[in-house]
Length: 286
Length: 315
Image (cartoon, rainbow over all chains, first blue to last red; front, side, top):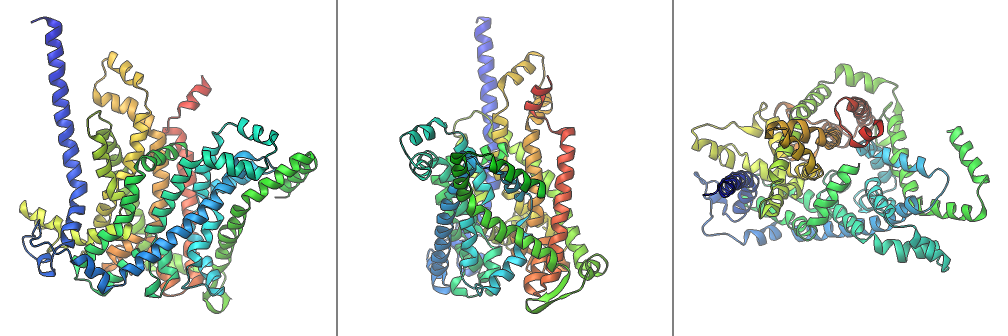
């Protein structure tokens, strides 16, 4: 056999070995990450007795699918779902309106103090929002807005520094010639914003929607502080309430957890590219 | 501030008519953020500072007590000390683990193999599970008798600890829970890895460097800006950790307050015992601490963070 050929075979063998060891590591890690999820899902399908079996049943037989409907019967889970979706929608609308407008102002218009204001906005990211929690609570309670959704919605209409930064960076990359050409054609500033910049910013707006959805869906501390009527609870708050009320019903608690993770999961599969790509982009430019 | 206004008014008078119109439009467009900044940020921060010198249970009028809250926090509040210790301990153990595991997983994910996207999705998935749900899952996974972890340990003949009911194991349990979501930062490191130019590795191979050498001499320095960024965010995040502690350790902090994270303590004082002044003082201490630490980390960054742009500048 010729030397070059033998060398080639050797390299292929090495390659195959790398592939096999690579996949082995990948599989082991996948198991580590997925097993708790499997445990959650399988517990959700057990009867209460099965959850306390030793050794545990890996595949519950029979699978008790009606745990999922039991969650809806025993706690107002449908209500929690609707409440959370409403909050998510309101926050997305708020962010879309405010974040795009503010980002446009910072990215495309010149005004005295722009850079200083932008720096001030970025520096607010460094200060934990928890320091504002108590005064905000006092403010909303003096306005009589405790146990309403206003404290969880209003701030969204003033934008979020992080999202504004993200969208502004994106808008900066759009050539200014487009604005100039539109102005020459007699377009107003609002026209340029609405008809030219916004449509071109669509990928960044997708990120705004995804991030807002996940943040609001997962938020726990603020609903905990502002809401005390169980009929107004969000999914996260409802779940924790459920945990306190019936500590040992792990099958139903896990069924509820499965239901709680479905919307973000669906969103994740639709927006996977933007999500993982977007996070890494802003992670590096920050 | 007066310098600022002087500069602003000066530049304002120098503007032409059309420039002024543009500037007005600009202020209008950013006005939502300005309103939010005043109403939901700057105002509350100042209010919180003033409140921290008062005693107030939200009904009635606040009573001015001077430095009383701070004095009590630093000299006579065992819970404060406990909360600081718990949070710092968590930060010191968890943050390095997060960086190490995040980078290792990113390296694993950076192989050119078929189906790698599927694995990336699987590693990332725990990160998107809502915190309340993932905390509940882990409370159940770590159940001393019926839980997954102790069952698996028993196969090896090990009797697992009592996890969340044992004061010594509460913090490790919460660290384990957090590490489950490490896929979130692994993805960021992965992006960092993919930005490392191939030529660097090729040049190193020509010089006879092995894998480990390449990793230490090329990968780590090139990743250092990402590591730095993640550490700063992680540190701030640690002081804000609330949900896992609330769900897993319990709202009062678990056995012997072993899971009393600082944020949980602020919540307890402010909203459970309704002590607005005391809670504000606690929040201000946290803010000051975070700002000082962030500043120190930024200061230290020159010594260990490698920025390509900077190198080009000095050339």
